[in-house]
Length: 428
Ligand code: ADP
Ligand code: MG
Image (cartoon, rainbow, N blue to C red; front, side, top):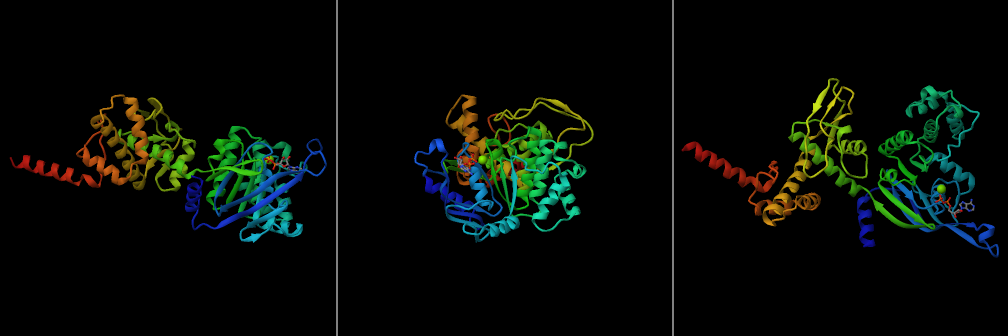
């Protein structure tokens, strides 16, 4: 099972360059007096950790307080050295470098974002950013202002930290972390001190950094925040206790979004992000953004005029908000691209064929049971199995609710026989 999991991880990241690699890394601290009988005990903050993080990968590090998360991030960030083991950053082993060499690698490669913002209180926002430039031996106010502009804070450049909200201070810290265009961004509980609105702003900035191809290691306690990453690593007592790759779970949620968009289109309704209700770990708006990047959907601003939303039910899902009226200030409109449309039609085809199979052939009569099963089958049926079921059912045209089943490659004959019967009736 574990072997199988690692093969999957390997396959997923096959061909990608290991940006960060840890080999048997251990870091110990002297135990505190009360835990320390003879004065010789050590706490293993990290205990023989091996880990590879691909270039462009976003990893979330979770685990209880004291499990070694910050120690891990600080070692990757060259703030400290391990007791033993190797730490490879972008092809260089930094485990045995001197303090000044570590400073150099850190300045070249790493950007840090901490939970405590670590801003100098008597320097303005732009001066705090310029201080980071100073450590990279270049100060350039225009460049520093441009960095603040990228995080949406140009007009706050002259404010002191005490005049900024927590979210704004954290954005200054992100601008500061990016000053040397680092390949690796390390964030230790970056949203730990923020309210929901500011958390979202920071997470969007991290997503942009990810989209730009940077490698991100982010410590978080929040499972929803962790879901934005590609992979989650859980530390317990300085060891990796669990890992989970998220890309596959996301796929199922994307399927749900596609299905809903397809059903809306079928019913002549337009899809507004704010009105969509899709179950899954990601907020709908972020799922849609990811799908747009994959070429499955496109978004456009809500039209200025108002329009009505007709009530509409997709029997498989709780689906949409009830009928309503949208004024011009509604949220963005989502549309399927041709690729998204094809994938949506395939999902809908599997779902509706499964409904037919359970209703007609297996004589299941609980609507709830049928829907639950169909919702599972739509994700797991292979193209071959789908075509076999379709052929077995004699290429049905509609699901038990009367909605059309998109034809598949096996349905050629269905079209032919219908054409010939149409031709026959024409002749007579
Ligand atoms: P986390 O970030 O998961 O809360 P840390 O990496 O900060 O955990 O700490 C891991 C363990 O190492 C804890 O037991 C902590 O007390 C200990 N530790 C961390 N830093 C030091 C230090 N500078 N001196 C002594 N012990 C430390
Ligand atoms: Mg910590």
